[in-house]
Length: 248
Image (cartoon, rainbow, N blue to C red; front, side):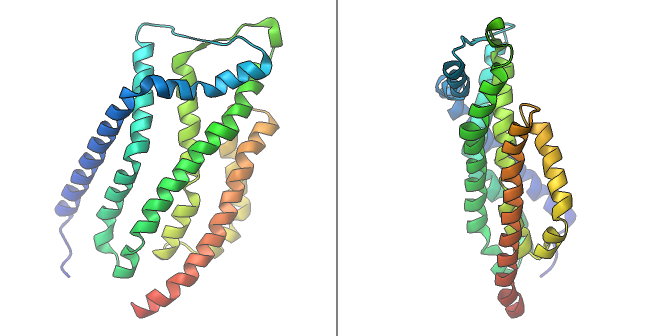
């Protein structure tokens, strides 16, 4: 089979990127129509913190553009969630022509796994990480202060934590895909376990809402567990790869 010129690959990449961007914009438009409901959902960890600590917490705006910018952020994140399956498909469709037939059969598990893992990461951040971290932060100084939180900064922080956890939860899926494609071996992951744990703890320290050991462990322990799961998934995927590769 004759290899396509570089220009054709770049043109196809441009088309895939445009389609993904359009899908994101359509999803953002749908999410924007429900921005009030989405804002109420994102405000839930703050409401739980208020009830748990008996504090009166108010979300305020610091300038006239903040409500609009915040609505756009929420719409963009919601649109990304809605468009994610289509975007992942575009990525796969771009690289699939260069793969063997048995490798192309990975499309369905990759698409389903990527969407599921990202969703689990977002849910973990929303139901586990944030409800624990927000009350902890608001507990400082007790009744000495009355929290007045900028809605733009609050929503931005919530979306950042959820997006980062969603991306990090893709580790097992990426491990499976790279192993099946022959780019990764489980022995490499196992041999570099100590380095990975140090990197995970450092990363957790960066993305953790607070600097205390409890919240650091709350983020780093699940990530270390995901790394271990990735090793086992890579080992399992490597065994499944042996027979198709021999046939190929």
